[in-house]
Image (cartoon, rainbow, N blue to C red; front, side, top):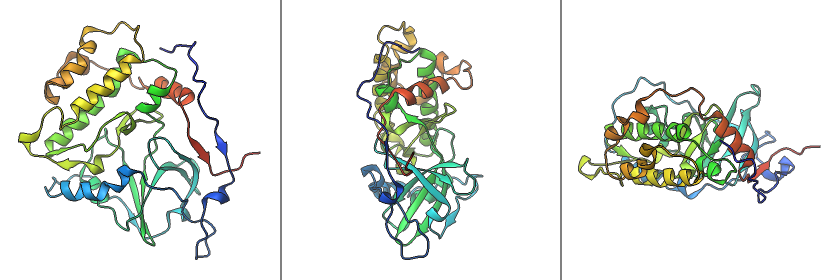
Length: 300
């Protein structure tokens, strides 16, 4: 799967810095306050997107409520690192349960409409919101951790196989189909919003920004199938000498012309897949892609 002779010479080194540079003085007795991480443009559009898309009531889901906590999240978690690539998120761990890792997203508004929507949307293809903290004038969302995005795969020195390509595309199609059933569509889809966990599970970021859409307006473009076709084409170009099956070669055209229900009936998506199919791809991409990481710990 890998091209061993490809090396990414432009990968910047990890920058280790003292964590005190990333904290502001807090008026309470607690020594640690929130790191100064600026929200990304996609985060700032959340409130507007939800306001437009949440008018249609969603069916009740047998999903436990997302905990809403009126306290400083940094009393519970400690920041570990922040990535400048893709998302303005802080990688953190629980202060007492050190093995509990999360991604923390800080919003400038006091309340986030994302939490109400996320309680009603439950599908394994979407990034899971674990907790929501309200402190001072800000709202902090705690998400399940991921390892890489498709952007990292495209920037890495590894190629991709048919099984891996299908393993990425199928969960995305299933997530789009799920939203279609709720009368909703993703606001955006691209390499930076398609994430993979350490176990190789595919997670779509940004479902909290999804919008309500009329059935008459549903088509490959509005349902982000055309955007997915572009991602598939870019991934295929990572391995130009690979002998792609005819059905894989035709996949971008199919994504732009037929419904998600028809796509999922294709033989490449109905045959069984091996658990952990994408774990090796995640590991190689994580080791060879660019890394814009700053650590909150000084290392000796």
